[in-house]
Amino acid sequence: MPNVEFVTVDVFTERRFGGNPLAVFPDARGLTDEQMQQLANEFNLSETTFVLPPDNPQHHARVRIFTPRAELPFAGHPNVGTGYVLAQRDANPPEHYVFEEPAGLVRVHVLREARARIIGTRISAPQSLSIDISVPDEAVAACAGLNEEDILISGHTPLVASVGTPFVIAEVVSEAALSRANPNIAAFGAAAARFPEISTRFALHLYVRRNGDATQLRTRMFAPLSGIPEDPATGSANAALAALLTSLAPGEDVDLTYDIEQGIEMGRPSRIIATARKTAEGPVTATVAGNCVPVMRGTVDLA
Image (cartoon, rainbow, N blue to C red; front, side, top):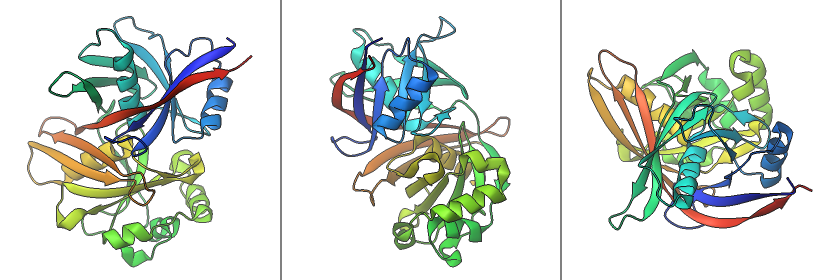
């Protein structure tokens, strides 16, 4: 295939050049694994997605997600943005899409404004909350370029949580501390060697409660070992965060909604609405939602 079409959108924002940019290849048939990875590296965004026919005809698409260095089993803003792109291209888009991904099925709900204009999507994470190892706060502080006392452990110690893609999640003491964070690549490398269970995906998600409100959050995500020094808006990490905080909330039947800011320090302000639900009988599940804005479209010459 000599030429392949792409579009880019800004995700988790209502204005162009905010949020998290995403490149989408709406028809990736004929591309090899190597070409997908090369294209993701060429765009050099947090993620690039490639849309393929589904294995199961009852679903809408098989979606592959690549960082500049590796393929991911699931990610949030790529699914939000890809769902938006497909809905914009469909003459009669469905209310929901179902995407096949390595982490499982991702359900994508199309969001519309009052006049039926498509403005974004809401996705359901493909897995329920899982909690893995704890990570010492001194290791987290070193990775984030912070002092150990900047890491708050009264609510929970830093730990690995996932709803499809794992993240080290840690709370910090203040917005000032969050703003001071600066990833130390050497410390990330040392932490990955120290914790081989998560060495291939040592991504750090920091958060703070805005004005002390447990559902008004501000976050930053660093994954330099995956080629992402910092991400302006991370749906999968914030979905895992919402699920984690809901699992720790008092009560057995709990539905919580979180209004999350990210990307402030990068000059790409983002707004993510995450929800999580827990019951006495079942696992903790999560969604993330946001608006999208189209930016570019074109073709890549592969001849």
